[in-house]
Image (cartoon, rainbow, N blue to C red; front, side):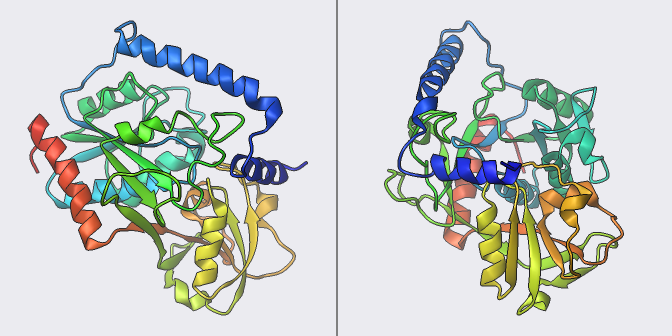
Length: 342
C-alpha cells in the first residue's frame, strides 16, 4: 500500500464509527502513560515553568486538520496590529537541524526547520523559534528578540512550558472522530480537555455531538489568490475558475483544501498526501501541462522551482466581527493579568 493509500485508510478508520480493535490495547497503554505524565506535573514531580512573558498555547486534542496553524497566524497578526510584540515558538516537525532551538526566517530551508516553521515565518514576518523543547525555544526567543507575548504553535500537551491561555482548535466537520485515543483513534487526549480550555475555536462550523461553551468562535478558511512558485507572481484564484487542475495537499485534512478549490469553480484532480509529507519531484510531475495548485505548507520546500505551472494557494483564517471581538477580548484579558501592554 502506498503512503497515500495508507493515510486515507487510517483516516477512514479514525473518523468512522468504530476503533481498530487490534489497536485498542495500545490506546489503553497510551491513556495510562499520558495519565501518569499529567499526574507527575500535577503533583510537582515534573516542573512546569512560567516565563517572564505571557504564553498563549494554540493546540488540538486530535491529530491534525483543525486549523491550528492558520489560527496562530491570524492571532499573531491580530496581536501585532494591537501594538503587542508577539513571537512564535513551534516544534520544527520534520526539521533536520543538528542544533536546536533554531531561529527561523522566511528564507530558512524547510529541510532544516520543518515546513510549518518556515510557513509561520513567511506568513507573519514575526520572530519564530523552532525546537522540540518548546520551553528552551521560548527562552531563546525571549533572549534574542524584544517580544512581549509568545504564541506557541501546538504544545497543548507540552506541559513543561507554562501557559497563561489555552486555545483548543476543533474540526467542525470531523469532530473527535471515533472518540478513541491514539493509535485506535485520532485523540491525543481526552475530550475533557475541551472543558479545561480557556477558549475553543471550531473550524468551518460547530461539530455535532460535542458540548461547547456558549458563543464558541467559528473560524472559516478562505482562499483568495494563487502564487507561482518560481517567481512569486500573485493572481486572483478566480483566474483558475472553470479550469482543470491537479491539486496537491499534504496537510491534516486535505479534502477540505480540495473542496475549497472546487467551491471556487475549479475542476480539481486531487492528490492527497499525509500531513507534513515531503514531496518528491516525481510527485510534482504529471503527464500534462495543467496547473498544479498546492497548499502553502507543501510549497515551502519548493520555493523558486523553475516550473511555471506550479502554484500554491495560501489559506487565510477569517472570523465574523462578533467572534473575532470575543476571541481577542479573551486573549487581551489574559495579557492584562500578566501586565503585557499593546
